[in-house]
Amino acid sequence: MKKLIVAALVIMTAVNFTFAAGQQEAGSEKVTIGALIRNTDEQFVADYAENLKKLAAERGVDLKLLDSRSDQAMQLDQLNVLLTQGVKHFVIVPNVTEATEDMAKKIDAVGGGAAFSNIQPSVEALKVSPNFYLASSPESVAGQIQAQILDEYFQAHPEKMANGDPNAIDAIFLYGQLGHPAQVFRSEAAVKGLKDAGYTVNIVAEDTANWKPDEAQAKMDTWLAAYSGKFDVVIANNDGMALGAVESLLTNKYTDDPSDPTKDVDGDGTVLRVPVIGVDATGVAVKSMSEKKLFATVLQDAVGQSTTAFELAYMMATEGSATGKDAWGISPLTEVTGESPATDAAIVGQCYLVPFAAVTMDNYKEFMQ
Image 1: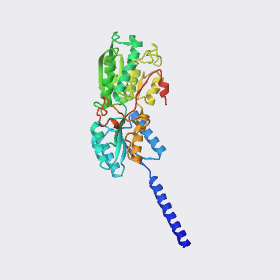
Image 2: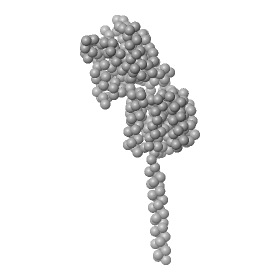
Image 3: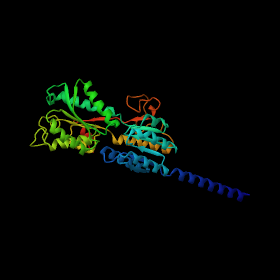
């Protein structure tokens, strides 16, 4: 009898051990996250993607990162491929807002979810399911900060106004892809911010350079030939275009001292005759500031946005949901804002906003990589 009891206990122990081992094995399966990225030719997006890779390596996540090269049709194909491979949880930097609802529906059909980042999803995309989130920065704030930086500059240097009127700013604008949320909100907010500060804003020249330095440089070359001495500032929607404008100004010797383009003769913080301001605070942009070429930028936090999005996707993959939880120390919104998609009270709790920050000659060293 004792032998039978001992034998039974041995069997039960073996079964329990096997069950526990099976649970551990199942629980230790590698988490997979898909990352659909707009275009890593853009420095900000490249930095974003690199941080995703770093986070995935630290967490032991199988990150399937695909670059659509600004082609929305390709991005939809990439999504379909990952879905057929069984991927359910995503970080998505979409090419266009209009495609996000369709993407969300495809992901929801397999019981998955996504954190849309950098480019805002539509309200309808977030309404597909509570498992779709915004992890981005409020674009209008970037334009507001640009306006604040320029107001401080012209208050300190009214002599830099080309038309001699300290209350009128003659500006050149370099836009990103037209209709892109960042292009629209950043540009409108910059103009509004300057007007609210008491300036008349005269737009001397404006055009898209599609976020690209080479296109911006070519535009600036043309404008310099037509408007030399007739503008006070170059305002760009991103650092890439701002740096393209800087290169044009340097090449055309539009500097304080054409014989020595390294001299900031008038002590205004830039060797150029006019300040150039961008958005992103990429490493190359901050380096340009250290050389007194680019005058200022606004930090769009690639690490902050990508980490917030990654943590949301990771929580969905490991806990089933991220609803109501903090990501990168950021809590979901509780009130609507003036910028879509956080304008709808029904989905405002799915929105996580990463703050922008001014990067000026006073603090740029804090952002050097």
